[in-house]
Length: 406
Ligand code: C5P
Image 1: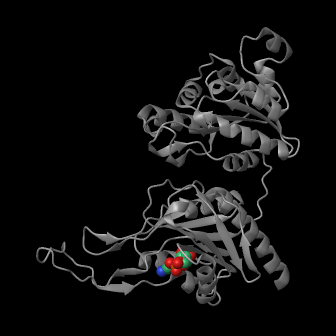
Image 2: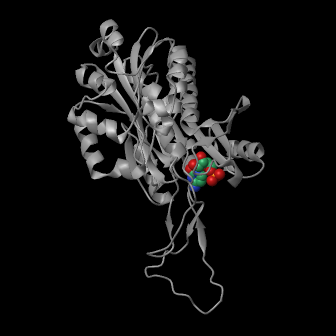
Image 3: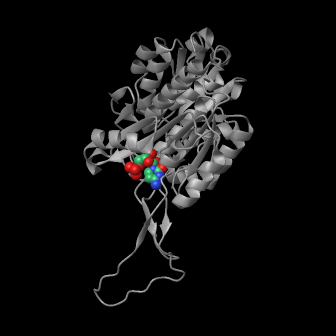
């Protein structure tokens, strides 16, 4: 990305502060960043902080005659290779969809012939409103690129899609649009399992667990960002399908196993799903009835197939790199190391899911990577960053395996 030129438009939203990290990381990669701060954006970050990080003037006002004389809004757009709008509010999306131009940011967006990347961030109801859906559909038709929004807890206390994509994801999207993305997994196939499984007890009840699918879905996005052809086999989750990924939806462990075997061959398999260990031994055709007041009922369970162990134990069809996850609430490393051996996986990612860690269902994680060479302690990071780091390592390992085979 060295020497590339990005014009960053900072909209008004609580996530505007994330742009300080975005700008810093773009500068580290040698990207020259010019910034326009909207009136709303200036409520959340100061022109001074953006100016220090971007090492340049921050543009704020369409009618600043000095700027118009020195560097007009047309020039701002002309000199950029890509325009990034982050956060993109519902208001900015609406203005862009209708071609309004009542401030510097929207005037530049209307005047530009460059690619535009938007990172929407808004309350979940605003994102889901029919007017916003219409604006988004129109902008996609117009060729505007989107990154996010992500699902999660919002600053307003609600939950759902509407959180701005993380700086790492925005940088990946920028690199792709600038044609500066390294695609070390181009031509490779990556198979990922994600989410929980649901094992029916009767037509209305099932056995499941608290897995959100966030980690598995982040892995799928990170693999696609490195150019891989990705199949994501997912149990029932409440989060959106990742873009550019083939998603196969399943409910039970048996369905997941069948879908996984169907998706082979693959170069890398990552089993991040929280597969239910047991299913009801006999699924009832009709809803089970309470037998007597306060009495016990015994539910007979049968063990589910172990998908990771099955994939790792395949002969010719075994992916060259098989990675499992060990979510533990105690004796993390010892349990993960034992699973590494028992399941025949090449690598195991151990993560502590003790309720106090917030890893289960949360956006952050702290893991240890167990490989035949030993155990690496990784620092706390977002699930996407962890995914990107793991996939980068996996792609290096594939190359080493290939060179060794040649
Ligand atoms: O549940 P457990 O701790 O054994 O899970 C460890 C790893 O095994 C995870 O990668 C999980 O996706 C995988 N697994 C599986 N099929 C199962 C149980 C676990 O693929 N039935």
